[in-house]
Image (cartoon, rainbow, N blue to C red; front, side, top):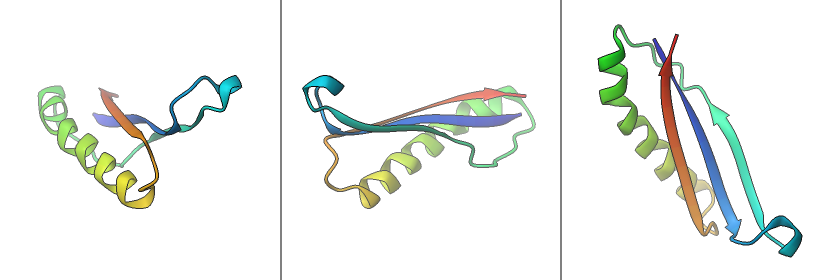
Length: 72
């Protein structure tokens, strides 16, 4: 069981044709869990860690989102 995190870093909160700018991607931290329950419980910590790191890397961002899912 692994966790996959989808994230977006919003630099300008507008539609792209109005000058909006964002960077969205996926991240696989490589953490392996034994059960789904274990993954579901700990994925929030991984999401929070990623958001903190992205704020550190991109302090000019307006918003940062990260959401994880567990799967085989």
